[in-house]
Image (spheres, rainbow, N blue to C red):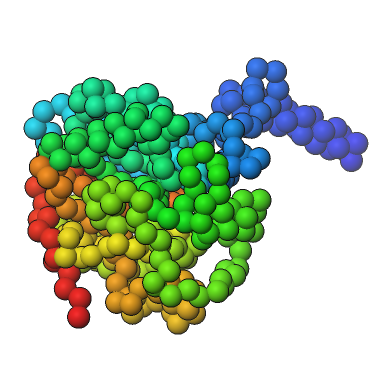
Length: 383
């Protein structure tokens, strides 16, 4: 009896293995001939880097991680808050010449997915300077600057660089839209990384690269190491004032990921913030602080609830804002055009937050001119 029972157990085990393997094959789970291993940029997240030294000739990754794209698709809003006045076209420009964020391909994918899902716009994604000409931009209703750090419109041709600068400013002033996400504001300021790899300044440029360039993701997300505190007077200055004014400010410093940030809705009834249902919230992300920002010049949507931040987290800040006001998203008019900026979006998980996507969708429709929203500047009064 024991031998028979043992034989039945062996047969059952073998049959189970065959069944499991068959199901695995049917669902594409088995590794074997014809199935590629989950390697490469479509499956393994590329780390961010500064594009000089060993990375000077590194080709910027354009492929989002597949699992991240699934998370975005699962979180997409079902409908847009406004009906487009006409078919809309957006250029997502993703060339980074300062710190090259790992999130760039996913942010581009997200913008395209939002437009495709809701019908609010169609999307062209470009990493190529050749696409940034006045003639080519004329076909678009808005440009999204996807974490475009450093001198992202510059090259060795001074005349062509000047033409691209003028094309962007003229585009917005003429009545078109501009959307900036996260590191779009980390552009054209001192202390950054020049286009051609020569080191310039300190802080986020050469010094930051030396501190962070070789670090692993785990090390960067480990315990925060305080830096020597510098006064606010040492904050970076703009190298392209027209662009900085259009953006509303420029990068000064950031709390590193995964800093917990308490977000306050400064205009809770604004339709761009409808996805938050009038409630303040918290988020983990890398969170920028800004130089050159004046709330009198823009309509502030959200900001850090500084009072809820711990003393230890407040003490991390370098070049402390004297007014302790830390904007996160805002809108304003530039000439006949409209600008929407959102400071969060550093870490990939943010793009699978439906409320964040609803703000990005609505803010983009505002920039396109399809969503009416109160954009009167100076809604936040500082003491």
